[in-house]
Amino acid sequence: MSVCYTLTKRNYIGENALDDALDIVKQRAYGKALIVTDEGLVKIGLVDHLKEHLDKHGIEHVVYAKVQPNPTMDQVHEGLEVYRHENCSFIIAFGGGSAMDCAKGINVLTVNEGRIIDYKVGGKVIQGPLSPFVCITTTAGTASEVTSFAVITDTSTKTKFIVIDELIMADITVVDPHIMKNLPPFITACTGMDALTHAVEAFVATGSNPATDCNAMGAIDLIFKHLPEACQPEHEIECREFMAYAQFMAGIAFNTAGLGIVHAIAHQIGGTHNLAHGLCNAVILPYVVEYNALHSEEARAKYAFIAREMFFVGPHERGTKAAMALVENIKKLSRQVGIPENFKEYNFTKEDAQIWTDKAFEDPCMPFNPVKPSREDILNLYLSLI
Image (cartoon, rainbow, N blue to C red; front, side, top):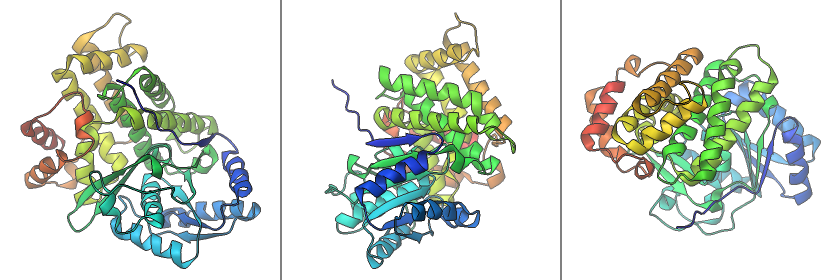
């Protein structure tokens, strides 16, 4: 069976990536931009920083800054109204995964009629081409800028749905470490652990292959080495650049290989309680690695490979002991960067867990997990987390 890779067209990574990308945007004469972002980035001055660079390149723009964590259908539709009212002709997503996903949803509707939920997996087919689309990430984690996925929340049912189509991928992506240098440590930690989750899940996913494994393993190595330093108030810009490459490689990996039950479980918690996606993944990851290792010989062998490559065990260690070393080192990294061990402080209930369990089996990430869990397995995972 062949493997299909869908990749973004132009990707700028490293110092001066923003200006290099805007040179191309100017050359292509995309017109007036709708900047899709959030109030937090407005308050800390990052949106003004972007606007200054756009002005320097003579690119007209207007800002929609109402995106919240776990973007909603309403935000997609509201952003679309701004796009149309302001006579915009292309979109710039500026932020983390929430801004990216909201912008992808808006872009779908610049050309296609109806509501964004109409285009969820199994729904209407997206028609293209869409409007020109530029993604500028302010975090090193979600890799939404290089994927064909958008995760949107339906607030009426408190569930997340996924839009998947290569047409929603960016024309130009920007991962500039200087944009990330003043990101708060906890956000750096959550987004960095999100990238680690992408890499680890992609490495054992049913769609993994030698090429995705290389990207995933490279990302895992960079994250373990550089995330702790990136979370320190004073750090070298170099560690941010390494994290930028790590999240990019992890995104390339999972966009083809798929993810797994970490995401299937996390999406439900974020949907009902609006908890940050990166935090959810970070807490859940070691629990799922342990579960998969105990129930799949193939997953156990691949986790053991990671442990050997990272020198968590000796070069000849195999099997469960090596896989559990990976679990312990994921937990150690989480502690280093301030991630809680579980969700007990949020006072979730058994009833919450039962609702999440039913919804998790409908999540498009579930089929890519190396183990096909039972309902009892997923419920027990939730209960161990809360």
